[in-house]
Structure formats: C-alpha cells, structure tokens
Length: 357
Image 1 (cartoon, one colour):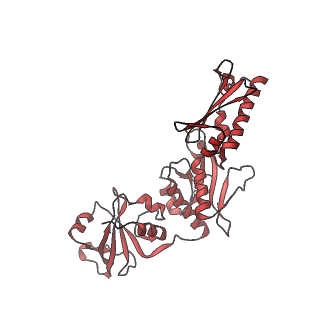
Image 2 (cartoon, helix red, strand yellow):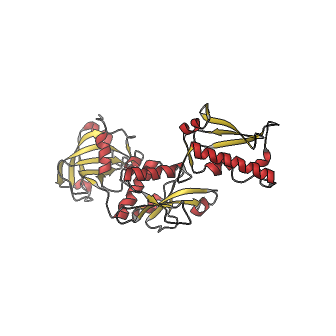
Image 3 (spheres, one colour):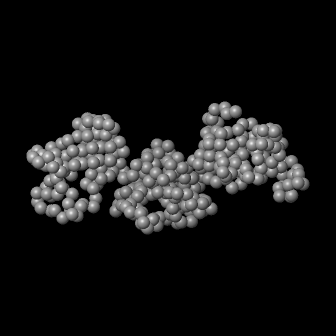
C-alpha cells in the first residue's frame, strides 16, 4: 500500500503556532495536556477525531461513522477515485478552517527561526523583508540607514548543507563574522560554512535548536556590528585575562594571600578591574581583581617572556558555573586567546550579580 509521503496534518499546520485560548473557543477540550475534538463532515458520513499536542503537533483520524472504522483510503496515494478525492479535500478544508480559527500564523516552519526573528524585531528594533519574489521564505534583516543585510533566513535541504545522510529541509540563518573567527565557529555544533555566501566571513547557523537562542543572539549582534562598521562597545578600565589552571594553582595562591604579581599585556592603570578566566577544564571567569600597581619591572625568574608586570588584589571569587565561556560568548566575548576588554553587555551582567563571597 502506497501511503501519501507528506502527512496531511503536517502540511496544513506547518506554519502555524498553537494558541490554547483559540483552541478552547473553537470547541476543543483539554485532556491530560492535549486538546481534542471530534467533528463530522461530508453530511455526517465521516468524523474527524483531532488531537493537538502541547508542542503544536496535530494528529488526525478520519472515521466512517456507520462502521466506526478508520477510513484508510484517505492516506493511500494510489486511490484517486472522485469519491476518495472529495473526502480527502473536505478533510483538508476542515483542517484549514481549524488552522484559521484556532492557530496563529508563523513566517517560518521551525519554532526557533520564528523565535529568533521575533527577538531581532523586539530587541534590536529591526524589521524584515522578503527581497526574493520566487522565494518568500527567504527573509533578510538590514542595518538601518545603509540597508545592508546582516541576517539572512533561508529554508534549505539538509543535503545541500553537506549533511549527506540527513533528510528533509531546515531553516538556517546566515551571519557575518570576523574572518579570523569563522574557522573556530564552524567547529561548534550547529554552525556550518556559509550556504551561498562568502565562506571567509559568513557562517550558516542551523535553526533546529542545536544552538541555544542566547548564543545565536550574540552571533547576530556581532554580524550587525560588522556590517554596520561598529565595534562591540567595551567598558573602560575593565579587562579579562586568561590563566591556565594546569600551569599555576590560583585557588591555592589566593587562599594563602590576596595579592599576586601578574604579567601586564595591556595598558593598565591602578584601579582598573581585571577578571581572571581559568581555561579548561573550568572555562569560566572565576576571579575579580583590582590593579594596585602597573608598569612594574618583570622578575628575572620569568625568563624575559614579558616586558611589564602589575600587582593585582583579589576582590571576589565567582562560582565556576556562573560566568562560563558560553555566557561570555552570549555577551560579546567570542574567544579567550589573550587579554580581552569587558564588553558593556557583559559588564551589565556582572554588575547585576549579587554579592558573592
């Protein structure tokens, strides 16, 4: 028996979002977290038993009312008699009416693509447009003023993305990134070399919830800043320095004393704030320190590797699970190779933290 390849309900509701209030108004009953309804059609000869799940998935069964049996010809592609086609069409019309009455329209098929576009419009204040008449699902967001694209939503077959064993299609988001960062970014699950864009400074983000929304938000901000010619704003006098925990045990040091002599890789001044980021396996900012003195001579025991030193005093210790690398990326710090300035976004997050001893 040849079954229709595309599920009827999936086709009808693919760009719709569940609206519980509308479902109840439309006559659905809530049962154990799902919504159910039975509706007669074709002069009562058939009944559609419908179930809508919490995630918006719609399941339907068409029953012949005289026999109380499932009407199997509905989903058999080879059966195309006038009667079968009429029943099939009436069922699809019924589903279309329910979609119009009890669901909200969405621009994209995937929930993450819709969430991300909503975030762009709400958080960044940028609208979208569809410049490709033949491809209405291809949506772009532009930098105000210059009208240059910084985010391009596409609906692409997974096979074209290099996923040879994957089936179906998926929403993706093309974003511009710094050329030196692209090679690192595409090592992350969910980020691929750009589809139909310059692969040196663009990437494609797969919008199937592989990446968290917050991570994608950070990539979008980076793309927007690059396209608009802006740099990520940073906080004055606040820095992040990486430290290798396998080379020196800072936990033990700060238990013994609150001050430490550190190499000075940037133009520091007394009173500046320095956050110390511990590398793997911690991968998080763990210490907040203040610069007591800067521009100090480097001890000879350091072997001439550094030109200047600074004296830091411990101010605060953070739990290792708090300011992780994923959080830093979300707020504009893309990597921790060398000293980095604290972005204004990250500073707001740190300032909002309650006092941690």
